[in-house]
Image (cartoon, helix red, strand yellow):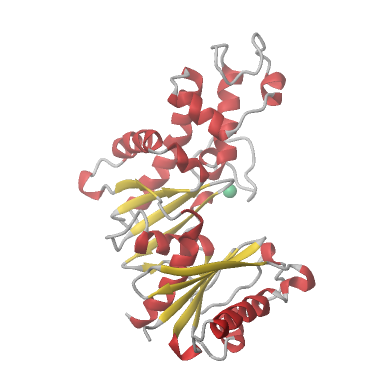
Amino acid sequence: MAKLCIGIDVGGTTAKIGLLSTEGVILDKWEVPTRKEMNGSHILPDIAASVLEYLDRHGIGTENILGAGIGLPGPVTPDGNVSVCVNLGWKQERNPEKELSGLLNGVYVKAGNDANVAALGEMWQGGGKGHKNIMLFTLGTGVGGGVVVDERIVAGFRGMGGEIGHIRVNFDEADACNCGNHGCLEQYASATGIVKVARRALADSNAPSVLRNRAGFDDEAAVAACSFSCKDVLDAAKAGDATALSSARTSMRYLALAMHYISHITDPEIFVIGGGVSKAGQFLLDIIEEYYKAFTVMGKGRAEIGLATLGNDAGMYGAARLVLNRES
Ligand code: ZN
């Protein structure tokens, strides 16, 4: 029997579990609820029980499992330690690699931060396929990401590697980011950031825009009250709405600035853009690329820019790939 890998992506609501071939094909996948009560003490046992039950039901012995990778929503050090994981209710330092391995009858387990693991997945089977050095930007409610150098995640000493949402890109920002700093990338290039930038653009001008929910208002309070989504902003920008386009360009300019910095540090072959915001597709990439090229004047240092393709499965792919990285 060919060897198989388990890829696990633990989120705040469910843990996605995939059975993958060593070639990177998902053979089966399922989910178990993430139970956060009792300081999240059920989470790893629930996952292990589900995996063992699945293997038993399909007549697969643990000797056929090369290992299990697990992506967790918090910093994970290279030796698998997690000091705290708020989203899972974990409040004390622990080593989920050792714990899960014990629960899985000694199967090799490798853990990583979920965003970093997703980057590895995109490198292996997604938007970065064919490359060994990529940087993933996940533009969702926040901005997450992961750096992969020579097919390996750059987790850093404290597991904080790839926390690119909090790179400071604007020194003149008055509003505070969730992290306490001012002017973080996440304040502009996340879905919430894009909406915020658009609100400001509306408040700063009287130009007509489809984003105004009623004609004629121009005071800031009224603009702040109007309700539209990131998709509304990007759809309007695509349709040629001048204010929406200008604000989307402002948001993507900050993203391009962060890419420029990263190019000079890890020199990726490709930047892969994922998350809900990336559904705007090529339209968004064109804006990002324009600014990225303008900032990165050393032409040989410029990376390609592409879209993520694995969606919510990226974490499972990346987690399985963590196991294979042990072999190489
Ligand atoms: Zn921040």
